[in-house]
Image 1 (spheres, rainbow, N blue to C red):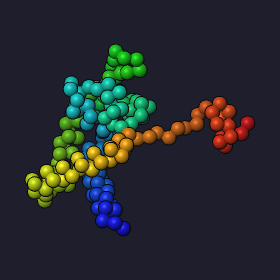
Image 2 (tube, rainbow, N blue to C red; image 1 turned 180 degrees about the horizontal axis):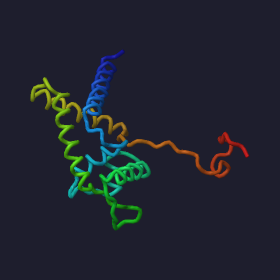
Image 3 (cartoon, one colour; image 1 turned 135 degrees about the vertical axis):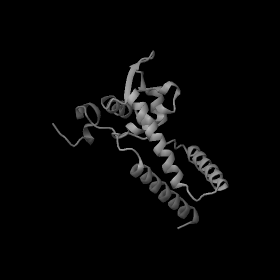
Image 4 (cartoon, one colour; image 1 turned 30 degrees about the horizontal axis):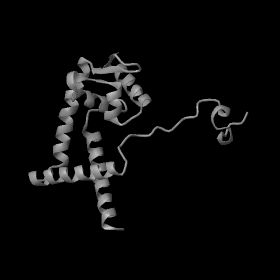
Length: 169
Protein backbone atom coordinates (compact mmCIF):
# COMPACT_ATOMS: atom_id res chain seq x y z
CA UNK A 1 0.00 0.00 0.00
CA UNK A 2 1.39 3.41 -0.94
CA UNK A 3 1.69 6.29 1.53
CA UNK A 4 -1.13 8.10 -0.32
CA UNK A 5 -3.41 5.06 0.08
CA UNK A 6 -2.59 4.78 3.79
CA UNK A 7 -3.28 8.48 4.32
CA UNK A 8 -6.59 8.37 2.45
CA UNK A 9 -7.61 5.27 4.43
CA UNK A 10 -6.90 7.11 7.70
CA UNK A 11 -8.83 10.18 6.49
CA UNK A 12 -11.78 7.95 5.59
CA UNK A 13 -11.71 6.25 8.98
CA UNK A 14 -11.52 9.61 10.77
CA UNK A 15 -14.41 10.93 8.67
CA UNK A 16 -16.54 7.85 9.27
CA UNK A 17 -15.93 8.00 13.02
CA UNK A 18 -16.71 11.73 13.11
CA UNK A 19 -19.99 11.10 11.26
CA UNK A 20 -20.87 8.40 13.80
CA UNK A 21 -20.11 10.82 16.64
CA UNK A 22 -22.52 13.39 15.17
CA UNK A 23 -25.17 10.73 14.62
CA UNK A 24 -24.81 9.27 18.12
CA UNK A 25 -24.73 12.60 19.93
CA UNK A 26 -27.14 14.63 17.81
CA UNK A 27 -30.88 15.13 18.25
CA UNK A 28 -32.92 12.07 17.36
CA UNK A 29 -35.98 14.00 16.18
CA UNK A 30 -35.23 13.78 12.45
CA UNK A 31 -36.45 11.40 9.80
CA UNK A 32 -33.90 10.43 7.14
CA UNK A 33 -32.47 13.54 5.54
CA UNK A 34 -34.69 16.07 7.29
CA UNK A 35 -31.84 17.11 9.58
CA UNK A 36 -29.69 18.13 6.61
CA UNK A 37 -32.54 20.27 5.24
CA UNK A 38 -33.15 21.87 8.62
CA UNK A 39 -29.45 22.74 8.97
CA UNK A 40 -29.32 24.10 5.40
CA UNK A 41 -32.37 26.29 6.03
CA UNK A 42 -31.02 27.46 9.39
CA UNK A 43 -28.03 28.93 7.55
CA UNK A 44 -30.09 30.56 4.80
CA UNK A 45 -31.46 34.08 4.65
CA UNK A 46 -34.91 34.15 6.28
CA UNK A 47 -34.54 30.38 6.86
CA UNK A 48 -35.83 29.84 3.32
CA UNK A 49 -34.45 28.22 0.16
CA UNK A 50 -36.01 27.06 -3.08
CA UNK A 51 -36.07 23.38 -3.92
CA UNK A 52 -33.46 24.10 -6.61
CA UNK A 53 -31.14 25.66 -4.04
CA UNK A 54 -31.65 22.66 -1.75
CA UNK A 55 -30.74 20.33 -4.62
CA UNK A 56 -27.43 22.18 -4.96
CA UNK A 57 -26.76 22.36 -1.21
CA UNK A 58 -27.59 18.72 -0.51
CA UNK A 59 -26.16 17.30 -3.74
CA UNK A 60 -29.29 15.26 -4.33
CA UNK A 61 -31.80 14.83 -7.09
CA UNK A 62 -35.14 16.62 -7.34
CA UNK A 63 -37.22 13.61 -6.24
CA UNK A 64 -34.99 12.90 -3.24
CA UNK A 65 -35.23 16.48 -2.04
CA UNK A 66 -39.01 16.53 -2.46
CA UNK A 67 -39.34 13.30 -0.50
CA UNK A 68 -37.28 14.69 2.37
CA UNK A 69 -39.17 18.00 2.33
CA UNK A 70 -42.50 16.14 2.53
CA UNK A 71 -41.24 14.22 5.59
CA UNK A 72 -40.26 17.54 7.18
CA UNK A 73 -43.67 19.05 6.42
CA UNK A 74 -45.42 16.02 7.95
CA UNK A 75 -43.22 16.40 11.05
CA UNK A 76 -44.23 20.10 11.15
CA UNK A 77 -40.61 21.25 10.88
CA UNK A 78 -40.81 22.61 7.33
CA UNK A 79 -43.28 24.69 5.33
CA UNK A 80 -43.60 24.57 1.55
CA UNK A 81 -44.53 27.73 -0.33
CA UNK A 82 -44.98 29.08 -3.81
CA UNK A 83 -42.16 30.31 -6.03
CA UNK A 84 -42.16 32.30 -9.26
CA UNK A 85 -40.45 29.72 -11.48
CA UNK A 86 -42.05 26.62 -12.97
CA UNK A 87 -41.45 23.39 -10.97
CA UNK A 88 -39.99 25.46 -8.15
CA UNK A 89 -41.22 25.90 -4.60
CA UNK A 90 -39.82 27.43 -1.44
CA UNK A 91 -38.99 25.53 1.72
CA UNK A 92 -38.87 27.33 5.07
CA UNK A 93 -38.47 26.39 8.69
CA UNK A 94 -41.66 26.40 10.73
CA UNK A 95 -41.53 27.84 14.25
CA UNK A 96 -40.98 24.32 15.58
CA UNK A 97 -38.35 23.78 12.87
CA UNK A 98 -36.47 26.87 14.08
CA UNK A 99 -36.40 25.48 17.64
CA UNK A 100 -35.17 22.11 16.41
CA UNK A 101 -32.57 23.78 14.16
CA UNK A 102 -31.19 25.71 17.13
CA UNK A 103 -30.98 22.51 19.14
CA UNK A 104 -29.28 20.73 16.22
CA UNK A 105 -26.76 23.54 15.63
CA UNK A 106 -25.89 23.65 19.32
CA UNK A 107 -25.46 19.88 19.45
CA UNK A 108 -23.36 19.88 16.25
CA UNK A 109 -21.09 22.59 17.66
CA UNK A 110 -20.55 20.62 20.87
CA UNK A 111 -19.77 17.40 18.97
CA UNK A 112 -17.40 19.23 16.61
CA UNK A 113 -15.53 20.61 19.62
CA UNK A 114 -15.21 17.12 21.10
CA UNK A 115 -14.14 15.54 17.79
CA UNK A 116 -11.36 18.11 17.33
CA UNK A 117 -10.41 18.40 21.01
CA UNK A 118 -6.69 18.25 21.51
CA UNK A 119 -5.83 20.02 18.26
CA UNK A 120 -4.12 23.38 18.58
CA UNK A 121 -5.37 26.48 16.77
CA UNK A 122 -2.53 26.10 14.25
CA UNK A 123 -3.39 22.42 13.70
CA UNK A 124 -7.05 23.31 13.13
CA UNK A 125 -6.08 25.93 10.54
CA UNK A 126 -3.70 23.46 8.85
CA UNK A 127 -6.40 20.75 8.81
CA UNK A 128 -8.84 23.17 7.21
CA UNK A 129 -6.30 24.26 4.59
CA UNK A 130 -5.40 20.65 3.77
CA UNK A 131 -9.09 19.72 3.55
CA UNK A 132 -9.69 22.63 1.15
CA UNK A 133 -6.83 21.42 -1.07
CA UNK A 134 -8.17 17.86 -1.10
CA UNK A 135 -11.67 19.10 -2.00
CA UNK A 136 -10.22 21.19 -4.83
CA UNK A 137 -8.20 18.23 -6.16
CA UNK A 138 -11.24 15.97 -6.13
CA UNK A 139 -13.42 18.60 -7.84
CA UNK A 140 -10.74 19.03 -10.52
CA UNK A 141 -11.13 15.28 -11.12
CA UNK A 142 -14.76 16.02 -12.03
CA UNK A 143 -16.25 14.73 -8.78
CA UNK A 144 -18.63 17.20 -7.14
CA UNK A 145 -20.40 15.14 -4.49
CA UNK A 146 -23.80 14.93 -6.13
CA UNK A 147 -25.49 11.66 -5.34
CA UNK A 148 -26.63 9.65 -8.32
CA UNK A 149 -30.06 8.11 -8.03
CA UNK A 150 -30.41 4.67 -9.55
CA UNK A 151 -32.98 4.55 -12.32
CA UNK A 152 -35.92 2.39 -11.38
CA UNK A 153 -37.57 0.75 -14.31
CA UNK A 154 -41.18 1.69 -13.63
CA UNK A 155 -42.38 1.79 -17.21
CA UNK A 156 -43.32 -0.98 -19.53
CA UNK A 157 -40.16 -2.82 -20.61
CA UNK A 158 -40.80 -2.67 -24.35
CA UNK A 159 -40.71 1.12 -24.33
CA UNK A 160 -37.11 1.38 -23.14
CA UNK A 161 -34.85 -1.65 -23.29
CA UNK A 162 -36.73 -4.86 -24.03
CA UNK A 163 -33.62 -6.99 -24.46
CA UNK A 164 -32.36 -5.93 -21.01
CA UNK A 165 -35.70 -6.36 -19.31
CA UNK A 166 -36.02 -9.43 -17.08
CA UNK A 167 -39.78 -9.35 -17.20
CA UNK A 168 -40.96 -10.76 -20.52
CA UNK A 169 -44.50 -10.41 -21.79
